[in-house]
Image (cartoon, rainbow, N blue to C red; front, side, top):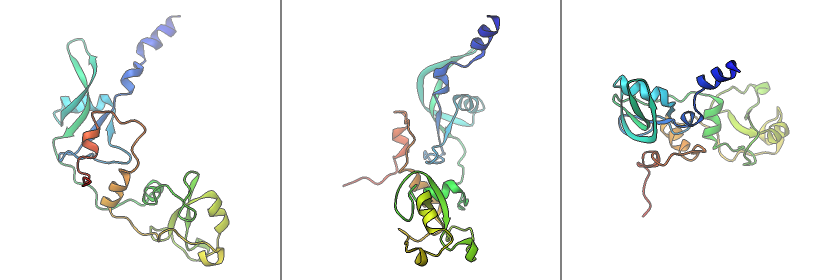
Length: 194
């Protein structure tokens, strides 16, 4: 009985786990769109006390210590500008993002892997210009053959994406949950329709 009480007492309340803070650069743009730049509420509060961020919006929830009560930040802005990286890392995630999470042969979504356009067995290298997202079915169908021998074609030729292009691509894939206080900061620099 005592062990159960201690475990419950130490556990964090469920509601506090669900309050991440959207992190904006000093220019009020998210540091990253996909995955969205979010910090746990504990890190956001620590950054406030260290005077590294300004709070733009808050949740209706508070956390307490013996001497202080503070509202949980929902949107914070870095005081110092973080220069975005120009180089895009060649990762599986960035490859899928470049290809919009679609098979580059049939256009389907889900169950993605990657495929070498020029097979490695035929001298193909692992690079932005030779690797595409592919569903398992198309990847098996193509095998170690060239596109021509397999009778397949690409939806678009693979190429190295620019960092800004990849950031903008991330906007098309919002996370499952967007807090209402974040919306104004996620798409404020999007071009308006006439």
